[in-house]
Length: 597
Image (cartoon, rainbow, N blue to C red; front, side):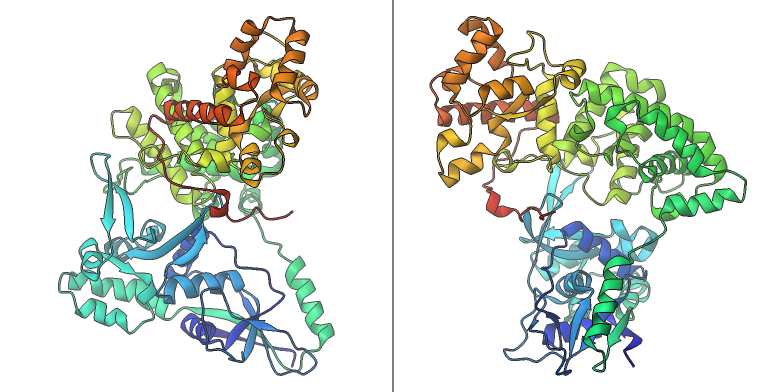
């Protein structure tokens, strides 16, 4: 028989990975999952949802020999020979074995690919009494075991989990003990845990994790090379799953409503606004679900926008969206998206590639729909603007959308009505050293800084004495250009990293970039002045609209330029976020390299 299929206890899989009885074939790529994906996987297990099939291959076939390597985070005894090689499921099993069974912090990264150390905890009371909101009960805690929190007054605090007594006092159970004998010791050592709550927690959550089984396809020793190749070709190419849009299409078809036709009409309307080009059918359904659930559940007993939002855009909520609700809110969401496009233009975001987060637009459209015309009030828009920039510059929208988007809708609305700041505002931060590591459009904050420069009215160095607006941006092909060219500064690695950063870049037309070429600043300034027909002192004023010190350019002084521009950009960011940037050391070495396409 080529393969066997059996459900295997997750506990057993983790134990075998730790002992080295399950290892990886050496050709497998590295473990790359980020913090939010790990937390989402833990939620899947805690709720007893399927995490998909894993595949192993028995070792011992002399015709199928692979060099083994242990899973990241495990340290089996030297020389341990694996019984099975994990062929499919490395990311999931590595994540779970580290989060649920390691004494050490998990070495992972955030959605920006910045390296992190994390422990994973579960709020006992929240998980026991609201298991359907498990994503709000499982927390990623920094390596120092200090969990940042915002108190009821909106002030930043930290929950100290460095000792067992502190964990118990906070009601936070360390998930690394879930399969350990220390679990019962942890409980017995503390009489502060409410017995009724703990019993419910054990019955509904820990027992779920204890009994969690994973379907495993085990390729036997009788498998041939040809068979293995055929299996992997299928594993790597099938990957076809129904989207929520397709499932909802089938559901609405019963009522003779063709969702793809309706979406095509919506899409055509959205495409008239270039910034909405990448807003897709799932983003649209998310926005409708947010508004529909918000109004359906508004006022429900026990709901608090700062702890348990009533609105939701989970897959289950979208699939449960009634046709009548879709038709009720669809046109209003379209209008709100068109408003959002105008809002983005006011923020200096004129084109599709410059939108920091398409996902954030679902929240923005929902906020506009709920607020209606009130969103046009100056004081209200000022709050929406600050929320927007905190999300962008705080780089908050790369993951965990199911929890963040509903929270944004309800908390921004509450803020407008006199409540405290949304957590997306109060918890947002920008590290001053991040300026040095923002080097490509892959970073939302990089796009954000470009937008802020356009918003404040930077003027092109060749085309016009007027600030770059949407028309100039499109017609004159405005893009990002280097202020100090790479070639001129030589090959110093430290300088090279800073040359690539947003500090050494600004927005210019293609014509200006061509004139500047690889010339030193003092030389290209002379050419640009001649091109524009302006005296040096007038041209200095134009340079300053980019938050660049003209004196340092004319002196070809990169160090003075970089220091002054960094300080000016940090002030710009502080004004947008309404809070001072933090100052912590950070370099490109703190980030995982971007994946090669």
